[in-house]
Length: 441
Ligand SMILES: [Zn+2]
Image (cartoon, rainbow, N blue to C red; front, side, top):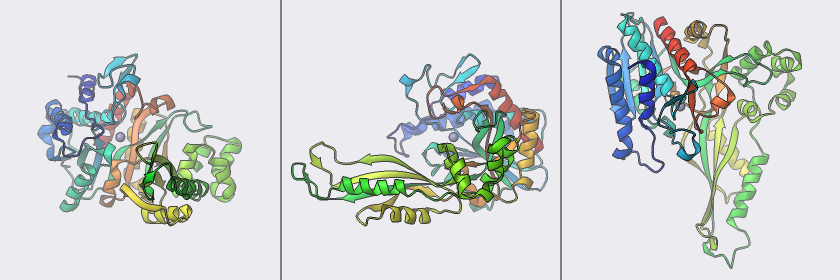
C-alpha cells in the first residue's frame, strides 16, 4: 500500500467514542485496538526495529534507540477522533474519499495525518538504513479528545517510573497559518511554545423543589443568572506573556504602519495596547484568561421547580494563573454565597514556555521547515486549546505544539466541524517535514 492509501485506510477505522460510552466499554474500545493492530500490519520495518509497549487501548509507546548516548526526544500523536454529524457532511465522514485534491474524513487534520506521516517517515528511513543518533520515543494516545486521562496521562506515568526524561517534545498544535493574522498575508509557521490551562467549573444553586404554581420569592435560576452576569462583567485582567510579546514583536516586522507600531510597542503602550489589540475573540484569547459559559440546566419539566440549577463555565488560563487562583477569582466575581462553585472534570494548570526553547528542538524544526516549506518563517506562539502534551510537562523543559500543514481559515474550521479534509499537497509536505526532522535526530 502506498502512503496515501495507508492514510485512507487509517481514516476508515472509526476510532471515535460513542457519546455515552464508558471508558471500560469493550465495544467502544474495539476500533482503538483495531487501529493499534493496523499500525503493526502496515509499518513492518518500523515494527521490526522499534520496541513497542502497549499500555492499554488508549496508549502505545514506541522506542527507537539512538546510536549516541545523548538526550531523548518524544513525538506525540493521538488516534482517537471526535464524532461526526453524518447528515451535515457532503461525504461519508469515515469514507476517506479523495475529491478535488482533498481527502475528506474525520481525523484527516486532527490528527491521523500527523500520526501516519511520522510512522511512514520512520518506515522509509529505516528501510534505507537510517540509524537515529538520539533516542526517539513516539507516544500515541487513544483518548486525547476525552482529556487524555487514560492514554497520555498513563504514558507519562510509565515514563516517570522509568526515570525517562526528554530534551524536547513535539505534539500537535498550531499550523502554518495563511491569512489568519490580520495585516499579514504571508503564511507563518506558528509553533506554540506555551499552552493555556483548562478548567471547567460547576456553578450550582439549590432550592426547595415544588409545584411551579407556588414559586418562592428568590428563585435559584435568578440567583444563578445574576451571578453569571457579574462574572461576565468582571473579566480576568489582560496580561502580556513573554511568548505573546515575542510573537507580536516578530509579527510587527511583517506589518509596518500603525498596526506594526502598536504590536512592536505592546509593553510600552500598556492598557492602550490591550484596547487596540484585543478586538477579536482570537486576539483576546491570547491576552487574558477566557470564560466561556457552556451549559445551563434546571428542572426536567416546565411546571416543576428545580431542586438545583446549574451552569458550567469553561476557563482557559494564562500562565502564571493556576486552577486554584482562577476558582478564587470566579467565586469573588460571582459574589454570592448561595452559588456553589466546584471543579467539573479534570482541571489543568497552564504550561509555560521554556526560556531556552531556541536551543532545544527549535533549530531542528526550523531546518525541517526550510526543507519542506522554504521561505516560511517560524513564529513562537501560544496554544489556547489543550493538547496531550500537557500530561508530559514534568518530563521535559521544552514542548512544541505544531502542525506542519498550511491551512486557510476555512480548512482550519473543518477540525471538529463538518467536511474535515486535508489537501494531498499538504499531506505530502507533512511527510517530507517529518522525514527531514527524523533525519536530523
Ligand atoms: Zn487533536
